[in-house]
Image (cartoon, rainbow, N blue to C red; front, top):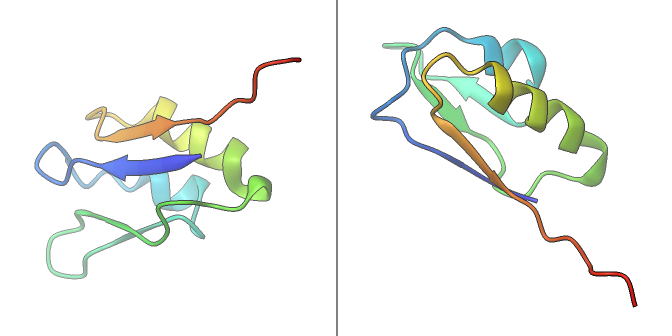
Length: 70
């Protein structure tokens, strides 16, 4: 999984930080999202997905590498 954020879209609601604090943080001065890791470990994938789903500004994008079955 790769996570990207669009800081220009972020409205500083902070839901991503509540849901996935290992992946997201907020800037002290304005609350805008800070991405802590672009490639979270598999244990954090579900939290990253949930954070992207609840983001009010749709500022979080995920891309997932899925291996096709043989």
